[in-house]
Image (cartoon, rainbow, N blue to C red; front, side, top):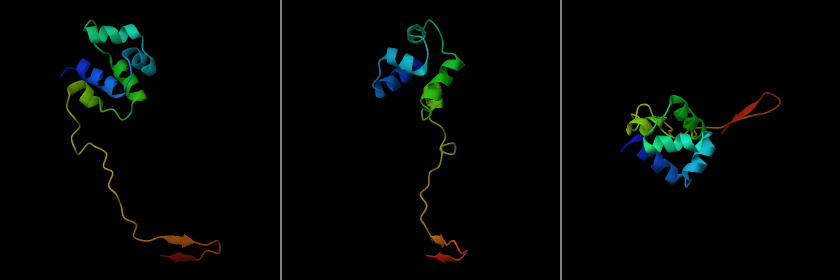
Length: 96
Protein backbone atom coordinates (compact mmCIF):
# COMPACT_ATOMS: atom_id res chain seq x y z
CA UNK A 1 0.00 0.00 0.00
CA UNK A 2 1.38 3.41 -0.96
CA UNK A 3 1.45 6.63 1.04
CA UNK A 4 -1.41 7.90 -1.11
CA UNK A 5 -3.47 4.80 -0.32
CA UNK A 6 -2.79 5.10 3.41
CA UNK A 7 -3.63 8.80 3.39
CA UNK A 8 -6.82 8.14 1.44
CA UNK A 9 -7.76 5.47 3.98
CA UNK A 10 -7.11 7.92 6.84
CA UNK A 11 -9.25 10.61 5.15
CA UNK A 12 -12.07 8.08 4.74
CA UNK A 13 -11.81 7.06 8.41
CA UNK A 14 -12.16 10.74 9.37
CA UNK A 15 -15.22 10.90 7.06
CA UNK A 16 -13.86 13.89 5.15
CA UNK A 17 -13.70 14.74 1.49
CA UNK A 18 -10.22 15.34 0.11
CA UNK A 19 -11.14 18.99 -0.26
CA UNK A 20 -12.24 19.25 3.38
CA UNK A 21 -9.07 17.45 4.49
CA UNK A 22 -6.89 19.89 2.52
CA UNK A 23 -8.69 22.84 4.07
CA UNK A 24 -8.44 21.35 7.56
CA UNK A 25 -4.65 20.87 7.37
CA UNK A 26 -4.17 24.24 5.64
CA UNK A 27 -3.05 23.36 2.13
CA UNK A 28 -4.40 24.08 -1.34
CA UNK A 29 -6.79 21.50 -2.79
CA UNK A 30 -4.59 21.39 -5.89
CA UNK A 31 -1.56 20.44 -3.77
CA UNK A 32 -3.45 17.42 -2.45
CA UNK A 33 -4.79 16.57 -5.92
CA UNK A 34 -1.26 16.69 -7.37
CA UNK A 35 -0.08 14.36 -4.63
CA UNK A 36 -2.84 11.83 -5.29
CA UNK A 37 -2.32 12.00 -9.06
CA UNK A 38 1.40 11.29 -8.63
CA UNK A 39 2.45 14.62 -10.13
CA UNK A 40 4.14 15.82 -6.94
CA UNK A 41 5.65 14.10 -3.95
CA UNK A 42 4.65 15.29 -0.48
CA UNK A 43 7.00 17.66 1.30
CA UNK A 44 8.06 17.49 4.92
CA UNK A 45 5.88 20.58 5.48
CA UNK A 46 2.90 18.56 4.20
CA UNK A 47 3.51 15.85 6.80
CA UNK A 48 4.09 18.43 9.56
CA UNK A 49 0.73 20.05 8.81
CA UNK A 50 -0.97 16.66 9.02
CA UNK A 51 0.76 15.93 12.34
CA UNK A 52 -0.18 19.35 13.77
CA UNK A 53 -3.82 18.73 12.92
CA UNK A 54 -3.87 15.04 13.86
CA UNK A 55 -1.23 14.54 16.59
CA UNK A 56 -2.34 10.95 17.25
CA UNK A 57 -1.65 9.86 13.67
CA UNK A 58 1.45 7.69 13.43
CA UNK A 59 3.50 9.34 10.67
CA UNK A 60 5.76 6.29 10.54
CA UNK A 61 2.72 4.27 9.44
CA UNK A 62 1.63 6.94 6.97
CA UNK A 63 5.05 7.17 5.33
CA UNK A 64 6.36 3.60 5.53
CA UNK A 65 3.32 1.48 6.28
CA UNK A 66 4.98 0.17 9.42
CA UNK A 67 3.80 0.79 12.93
CA UNK A 68 6.12 2.05 15.64
CA UNK A 69 7.99 -0.53 17.60
CA UNK A 70 6.27 -1.41 20.85
CA UNK A 71 9.17 0.08 22.86
CA UNK A 72 8.55 3.44 21.15
CA UNK A 73 4.85 3.48 21.93
CA UNK A 74 3.67 5.54 24.82
CA UNK A 75 3.10 3.20 27.70
CA UNK A 76 -0.08 3.95 29.59
CA UNK A 77 -0.11 1.49 32.41
CA UNK A 78 -2.90 1.65 34.94
CA UNK A 79 -1.77 2.19 38.49
CA UNK A 80 -3.66 1.12 41.57
CA UNK A 81 -3.99 3.55 44.46
CA UNK A 82 -2.12 2.30 47.50
CA UNK A 83 -3.13 5.05 49.92
CA UNK A 84 -4.47 8.57 50.15
CA UNK A 85 -3.08 11.25 52.45
CA UNK A 86 -5.38 14.01 53.69
CA UNK A 87 -3.55 17.20 54.64
CA UNK A 88 -5.21 19.57 57.13
CA UNK A 89 -4.64 23.32 57.44
CA UNK A 90 -3.02 22.90 60.88
CA UNK A 91 -0.22 20.78 59.37
CA UNK A 92 -1.55 17.43 60.53
CA UNK A 93 -2.45 14.64 58.16
CA UNK A 94 -4.40 11.44 57.98
CA UNK A 95 -3.42 8.47 55.85
CA UNK A 96 -6.17 6.20 54.52
